Image 1 (tube, rainbow, N blue to C red):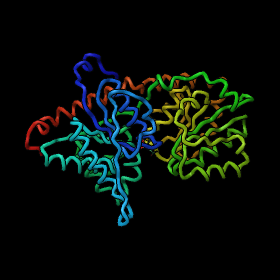
Image 2: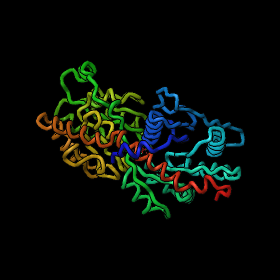
Image 3: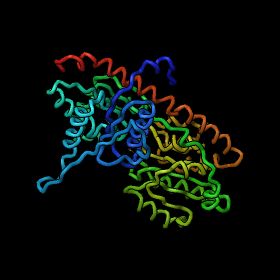
Image 4: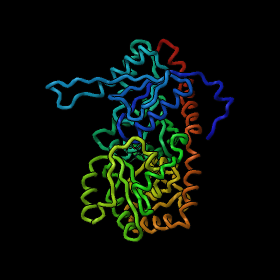
Length: 397
Ligand code: GMT
């Protein structure tokens, strides 16, 4: 994975537009962290989103932000965001003289980019578009008949396409009539930021009697199987003193609280909402639970591992490409809460926990931004090289 210094020296700095969802969610986090890392390397990065990305908490002279403004109008039951986004892309490419647009999450970013590209072509500008597929844009929403033709078309029309795991790449080819290559570039972590912090006072406040601390982070949607998080924790709690921290928010949050109340464990569960500095909580955690129905990568599990937290997950999607069975944690079949409980108790045993923690960190180091950023840089340069005749020629095709 790591790139040689020699190759890196020859890369010129590029002027790139990044389009993403700015909200609490994996694709937005990856896009924002990627932009920050590119800016640190000297590239100029222009974020194009409808609000400030939540992790864009960092000042750098190479970072720029362009807000997509869209008006509502009495006629619009659904304001046409995609049109406003495409218009914004056109003006940013034009005014900032961008070299490349990188859109994260196919819907509607890839199709809006296609539209922007067509408009710019009429002005003699060819803007290469790279689309990164993140997960539900393919596995859930993208497959829906109401989006599938547009998703297929805009993937095929992109100048470069990446997927965050081999499994997502395969699933894309299996389901959509894709006629182009898809490059796998896994998600990454800034280990410097996620370095385990000394937060003993925090651990003592939450677990005053030395309880095990279990954590779950997600956007609390059905696909995350929040009910299974609670069931596994209930079973752990029946066997040993433990606390559960639930980070994030979404449609399943209220149901989860009700489930905890009915199970009589609410006093040992805390819902912390959309916490930005997840590393502070993860630094004191003993176990991370991710029993999702589908997960193209599982960025939150990587964040946990970077803080030396072993993972109990389902064996689905791209998770096996991250969580190593019996080494960094365990995987069970989706919904098998009894198996997850057994394995969680094994990890939490004080004879086993230190080895799992060390292995989790070691595995996370493979996904450090210093290893993955060059893969993106090289990919951009490949796309720029391949599209060079279109960019320089007046007859854009
Ligand atoms: O679907 C989500 O949970 C949100 C989605 C996103 O775009 O924010 O997450 C997906 O992308 C993440 C970043 O690449 C991956 O780590 C998640 O595994 C993936 N989620 C699913 O596949 C369910």
